[in-house]
Amino acid sequence: MSIIYKGTTVANVSETYGGGSGVENVYSTEETVIGAWIDGKPLYRKVFTAIVPSFNETAPVGFLSYPETFEVVHYRAKLTRNDGYSTETNWLSTLSGYWYQVYDHRPTHSILVNGGSIASSLYSGTNATIELEYTKTTD
Image (cartoon, rainbow, N blue to C red):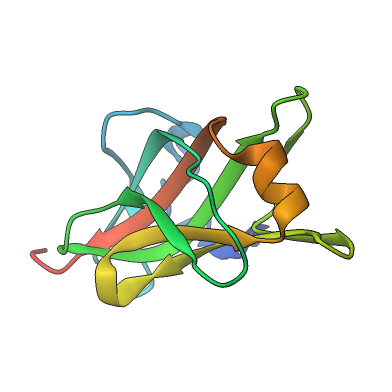
């Protein structure tokens, strides 16, 4: 049994997570089964696009809501600034006033963003791509 580390998700190539069939590399706006989670439930992936709202460090805001049946096990957000620079990190802090955080707020089934005023001016109104990997409470 070989183990591959994929982001923060552990994949067992011989038995789960696509079984090495290549489906684990599918990124689509359609829900795709990419394997099985560690508890045997089907593991899904879906890619969402959203517009980043205005945000600041005192009031995180949601920019993607997902169904209550999703149990998110991994997510990644790619934000593209208004000058064309993009980043795929969920947390960035470089200078005072230039930081942002993207996180999964499970109680509201939302992906939220907050950050300093410089980051807000660079990212607000721009495109975001959010990759969710999840199981479902209904499976």
